Image (cartoon, rainbow, N blue to C red; front, side):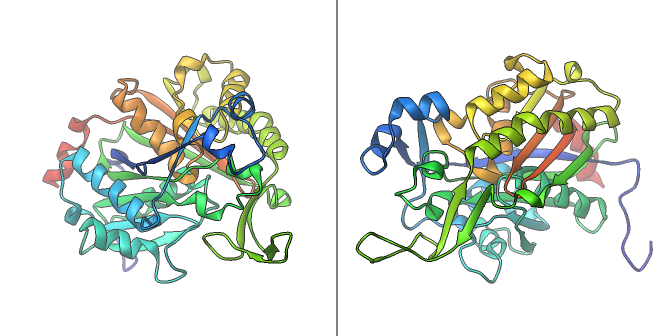
Length: 350
C-alpha cells in the first residue's frame, strides 16, 4: 500500500449491486401541455414519442428525488443507507449552488457517515459519465460501497412558451449502488467522448428573458433556460452514437449481436429506434420508458436498467451496453456483464 491509497486488487471487479429509482407522483399529459404551449398531443407522440412526463411537486427538490432513489437502491440490495461510504450526485439542477446536493442527499437518505460531492457532466451524459467516476473511486480501494445518484428537476429549467424542450423533459432520479464483485462480472470498458463545437446544441443558457409587455420572465432557476436543437441531437445520436458503441464493442472483442440488452438514453423514442436500427439489432433488445416518463436526463439510463430488471429482461451474466448522450455534445458508453446477488457475497465477508 502506497501513501496514495490501495488500488483495488485485480481479483475484484466493479459491479452494480442495485439500481434504485424515483419518479415524482405528478404526471403531466400532452393534452395538459396543449393548454399552455403551442403544440399538439398527436405531434408530440409522432415526433418525440412522449405521452406523459413526471413533474416534481413545488416542495420537491433535486436532493429529495436523489435521496428517494438512493433509499430505493439500498432497499433493493437489502442494506441500510448508513452502510454507504461515498455518495456522488450527478446533477445540473442542485438545490443550491453550494454546498453540493450530495450533502442533502446523504442527510435525507440517512446515509450519515458517507462522504459526498456533486459532478456536472452535462445532464443526460451523466448516466455513464457519473457511473465511470463512481467506479474509479471504488477501484481506488478507499471505498467499499459507492452510491452514484443521478437526479434533476428538468422541468424547472423550462420557458413554458418554448415548446422545444418543454415537450421532451420530465423530472426523476436514479441511483447506481456499486460494490466489488467477482472479476468476470461487472463494469467492463467505458468510452467517453465530447464534441464542444456543438456546445449550444443542447444547453441551459443564462440569459435575460421577458414577456411581450416587458415583464421579466424567469425559470425555476432564475435566468437559466433549457434550449435545444432537435435536428442536431438527432443527427448526432443516430449518426454518430452507433459508431461509438461499435468502437466500444470492438475494444471488448464483441459484436452487437452478442449484447443481451442496450440501455439507451431516452432522448426521443425514434432516436432510440434509429440507434437500434443502425446497430442492426432488433428492438426487443432494448427497453424504453420515455413514453411515460419523458427525458429524465442523467437518470434516464439507470431507470431503463431498473425497468428491465423489473420486467425480467435482465439476468445475471447478461452483457449490457449503456449509452448516455446529450449536451456537450457528449456521449458515454459502457459494457457491463450483469451481476447476480451471489457475485457480491465475498464482498460482505471481505
